[in-house]
Length: 414
Length: 106
Image 1 (tube, rainbow over the protein chains, first blue to last red):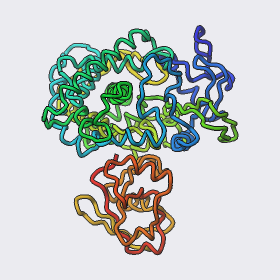
Image 2 (spheres, each protein chain N blue to C red):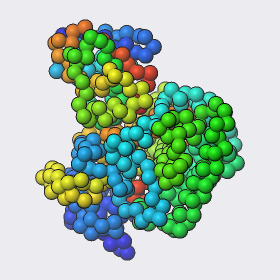
Image 3 (cartoon, rainbow over the protein chains, first blue to last red):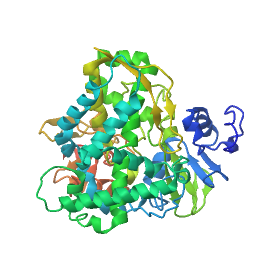
Image 4 (tube, rainbow over the protein chains, first blue to last red):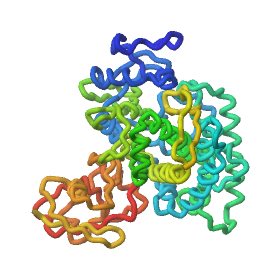
């Protein structure tokens, strides 16, 4: 699709001309019919010419699971987004590595977000969520994204890193910079600003590392956990690896939870019967949280690169081809999820979605995300009979992060 | 019908009459045994049906294959007797099998 032109009519465009890398599809929330057609007519779909060069789209749930599980044929190197890296800053992190190196690095940080450790943070997170909700301007219209979603995830990140609380907005800033350049995901961040921001991020965390090293403090935070693990105890000596993994942890905990925190409000407003169901039975919160994560699909795709020529569903994928797994499409695949286009908070198997990906790169923070959103909704339901959406949501221009930038709401106390 | 016992991390025992030909994971889910999430539905792709096979049963259940091994490798609580229960197909010779469930799935 030509970026200068309007989006083509999904009902009449030739299937071979459908290009789902066009980030306007997500900014305008217009993606549904295009993916419906791809799943039905051309589920393994080739685009010869896009803003990001030629690429394959995998659009059905089962096919995505198969590609995601096959790290031998479909590599996560050199990067896992559709746009190629144009790096003066060659970040190294395990999401863009294949086994065995991936496994070593991931194992070193995985335990940090194990549910056993998370339980120790629950009361602190709950207290901070409570403070955010108690300070909301009752009777006024405000942007839920700024006041709650961003504030919440920024505080969470500061808590997880034990980052100086008064400087916590830097974490969100760095995270946004890392994922939003035009080349990487069709966003609008200036690459030079990105470079400067990421350099500042590295300097800050290098200083924190040295301050914390051997200071004997027993708190549970991600930096000290890296320092304690023999596999990562010297990670600071490999700056691009340290920064890469920091960014991975920051991005992983930022956009994803932020946009799910906004999406829950939107979904419940668009489906008032489900909001009624939730009010009648708040025990549905954990299952609603999983449904929100599916419904939103905060990261819409992951990319692989073919390691060799592979025939897949009758299509000839060549060595070096980009293969993009559209989780957003898989999550709305009727053949895998019943009534996939509907938001249903009491599904029989709500965790059966692909927002966390599958295979060795599956999101390691999945239980942390679920916990944060569960606490948020438990605390919302304690305070408000309704969080009412009072205007049209505005969405982010990206083909990677499915984001909501403005969600005007009013809150109605119990 | 083989009888299989799954022991939750808190010690609660669940003894089920398992169906031959189905995976241990599906049998656990069908019998509402808590502690197995099985997010991916049995595709060896999420690692949330992790269990520990008690001896002397490892020779009967067999070992993990490559993909399962790579998924198990991601578990912080991985042990020598770790398996993904979706990759254990229940057979008649598993009558009496005992598996323990982990503290958490992720």
